[in-house]
Length: 116
Length: 115
Image (cartoon, rainbow over all chains, first blue to last red; front, side, top):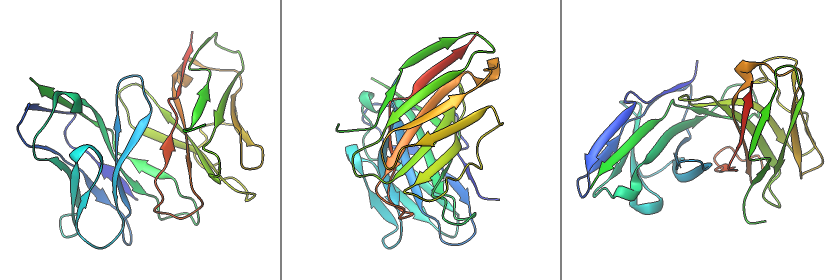
């Protein structure tokens, strides 16, 4: 079965320090991977995606993610965290099973808390 | 509009009542999705519409749930005889076409509370 795992419920980091939010996946075939961010009382916002090509993907707000096929991971990173980055982050993979359905399979989310 | 809109933003209802949630996708987006987000959990797929194709209803949790879409525009999600376990945020998303790597754009959600 296809799945996404975010092993950390919460990540705490000091402002200015680098941050990493972990994501691992399990799919049959080549994965299409996504990161979304959810601020309080708001919908999800797209950050970045991996389709093919360069393993390092750059996205919005200075975030980037590294695709690692051998480790089946797609960790989200940022060199220098901001307090305003504090939010709930979701990793997702496109469901490649079941024909043409384009639904996303989401992880359970990781709450990022950046302390000033 | 510029983004996906949903209404109402909040809905409080009594157990056993029917509710209807509305989604207006981004103009030109042929694909539309409904997801459910329970407190402290990830998003759970409910249903997917693509153009005039038959919708993928594989995520609907019971026959109390149904959804419709008029052409490539507005969609409504209906929950009949609501139960307390239906309490959640219901999120709608749309994307440009059926290309599998197109990102989905999400609305702000409807927070449903069943008393």
